[in-house]
Amino acid sequence: MIDQIETNLYKLELPLPENPLRSINCYLIKGPERFLLIDTGMNRKECLKEIHGDLRRLGVDLNNTDFFITHLHADHIGLVSKLATGNSRIYFNKIEAEHVKRQGFWKLAHPASLANGFPEKEINRFLEEHPSRCYGPRADIVFLLCANGDDIKIGDYSLSCIETPGHSPGHMCLYDANKKILFSGDHLLGDITPNISALGIWNNENPLMDYFRSLDRIYTLDVGMVLPGHGGLFNDHRQRIREIKRHHQMRLDEVVSMLKDRRSLTPYETASRMTWDINGKWTDFPVAQKWFATGEALAHLIFLRKRGIVNKEMLGGGWHYSHTSSRDTIKSGAEHDGM
Ligand SMILES: [Zn+2]
Image (cartoon, rainbow, N blue to C red; front, side, top):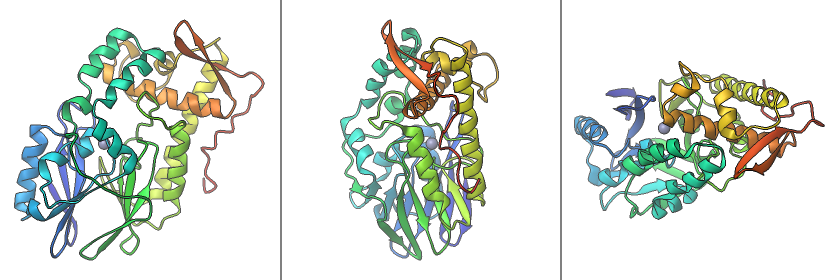
């Protein structure tokens, strides 16, 4: 589905079958000589068919098209190896480009999931169907690496790369200061809270802290319109940032209070007791949702541990977290001065 947002700027909404996100937004900018496509959809036939149709209708020649990929997840990068030609530049961040080259990085999630309390039967089944395994890109993509502050010019758009780690370790947004437009990828979404997970595959030590810092970086920008990776466009990015921070503050409070009542919990057990926007009991959650929830619980536990509020110890082959009774007040750092 194509929506024209402004002159030479279009939103292409592609279906994500069997995925709770339902669809992904890619954005096309037309320049006088070249086109820029921001994100691509999953490497699966439904996305390919839809985007080929959309690009044809918009008169886009893939031989003259460059790509900017906000982050590594399969719904954003998956199709790039099917769409890019020998003439394409593919802008991407360094840290995640290395993961694409290595492929199979998701296998590292297996031992990490077990160590964080995930039952082996469930994790085996989930990793068989992991989207990065099924719908990711090929390994041999040649990327043009970009970093914070780099500019990409296309027609009358002048886009600055902004590093926003948290949802993924190398996540990047694009910002046009003149037009006050932010392409936010999955860093800032209007309809759902981006998943912040610490499960498995990354070296970054405290993704929730990274995420808060990245929210602060975006908060200071003058933004008139946010174009997110999923869901509808929205305007007030500062209000949304405050809402998302409040959400994480509530999660942190919830985790602390549940640990105060018990000796210790694994991240999986913590996740099973947290409040989620999914109908039904934890035991009925699809295994993918349990995996994302456990990763999110772990991100919150790591954040609290770095603040000295919880302890971590290895018990019976798995990590257990407990409350540090000497610290009763939460200084989470989630609060923003402007809140
Ligand atoms: Zn996404």
